[in-house]
Length: 207
Image (tube, rainbow, N blue to C red; front, side, top):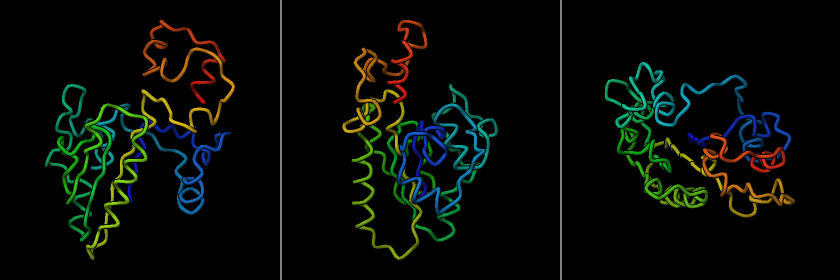
């Protein structure tokens, strides 16, 4: 099972030393029982080339991916991880919530099933539950005797991020300022100086 969580910062994962307990399942099921990589850097600062690199082992430069040339990210001249798994006897399935990693731009290569119906919705902070439900429902109906390679792509931490209850108040229940997650949006107003946050506002957005 290959899980990607879009825009999740390693330094906000508790098994990497973050002071808040943010990721109890990752801590107990993955970090404590598996391998945790302390030095890992994305090959790109944005979605499509970073994920194309993950799937091929080639850098975005080698894949010839740029901001103006991303619409078919996985070209046939680079074999994907999924194709290797498929050729090795695995059944393969993908569940994706990010349109920039969608089945239609090449990320379906090697997958017997590529499901990105949730990616067609406007960006939502509440995709995790329907995605998980979609995956569990599908796997419960899986009757193939082949081993299964499953790719699951979560989108929720990506801006705009307006966490649903109980996460909206879990780490900062006393904030009374105006820079809510909804106001912060994608952060452009703060980055361009239209909004000047106070230290307490920044604390709240981080929380």
